Amino acid sequence: MENQTSATYFVLLEFSDDPLVQIFLFVMFLCVYAATLMGNVVIFEAIRTNAHLQSPMYFFLSHLAVLDVCFSSVTVPRALMNLCSSRTISYYGCIAQTYFYFFTGSTEVFLLSAMAYDRYAAICKPLYYAQIMNREFCRGLVGGAWAMGFIYSLANTLPLLKLVFCSWNVIRHFSCEFPSLVPLSCTDTFTIWVTFYITFTTLGLLSFVVILVSYIHIISTVLKMHSVEAKRRTFSTCSSHLIVVIFYYSSACFRYLGSSVASSVVLNELLSIQYSIVTPLLNPIIYSLKTKTVKEAIKNLLGYKPLISHHMSNA
Image (cartoon, rainbow, N blue to C red; front, side):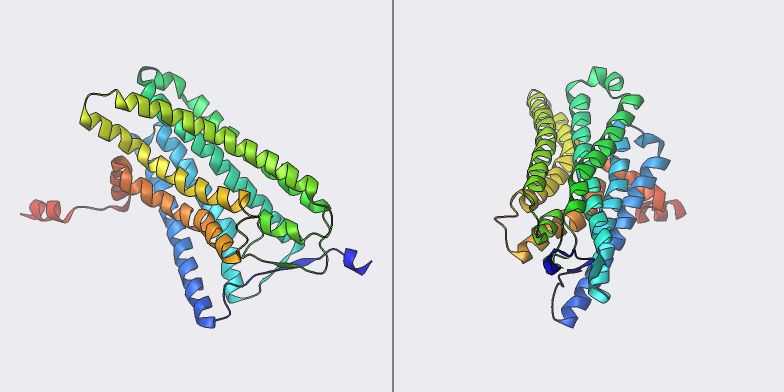
C-alpha cells in the first residue's frame, strides 16, 4: 500500500557533480537565454515597426519569434534553478512544464507548416499570392496553429494526472519531458503511450506532408526558371525556413520517437538542449543573416549607421 502513494514532488537530474562544470553551464545557459530573448524581441520589433516587413512571410516570422521566447522560457529558467539552487520540482509544477513543452513545441510545428505554405504560394502562385495569403487567412493559420497546439497538449497532458508515481521520483533529465516522466509511474501507461504515439505521429505527418509537398512544388518551379539570379534569390527566401525545419524536426523526432533506442541520458539531454534551447536562439540568427530585408530592418531599429557613410557625410 505504501508504494501506491503518489509522489508529491520530483527530483531533476543534475548536469554534473563538478561545481566548476555547474558554474560554466549556468553562465552558458544564462547567456544563451539572454541572447534568445534579445534576438527574438529585436526580430519582433523590427517587423512590427518597419512598413516594408508587413507581408505574410514576416507576419509568420514575428509569431515565430514570440513562440521561440515562450518555448525557451519553458526550459531554461528551470534549468538555471537546477544549476544554482534546488533540483526538486512539485508534482503540479512538473505536469505544467510538460504541458507547456507540448503546447509551445507543437504550435511551432504547425507554424512552420504555415510558413512553408506561404513560401509555396509566393513562389508557385505569385499572381494569386495576395488573394490566397490575405490577412484573414494568415490570422486563421496562426490562430489554428495555437489552437491545435492547445488541443494536442491537453490530449497528452490530462492523462498524466491519473498516473500514480511511487517511491522512485528521480527524473533522469533536466526537465519534465514526457519521455522521462511517464516511465516513473507504477501504474499502467499503455493507453498513455498509445495516445501519445497516435497524436505525435499524426501531428508530425500532417506537418511533414504540408512542408514536403510545398517544397516539391517550390523546387519544381525554381528549376524551370531560366535566370540564375532568379533561382538564387528564390532559394535564398526559402533556405532560412528550411534550415530551421531541419534543425527542429531532426532533434525533436529523434528525442521523442527514438526515446526507447536513445536510452543514454546524455544523448537525450543533448537532443533536448538542441531543439528547446539552441533552436530558439538560432532562429533569429538564421533569419537575420539569410534575409537581407530583415537584416536592414534590424540595423534601422538599432540605429546602426555604416562607418564609411558616416565619414563621407562629415567630409
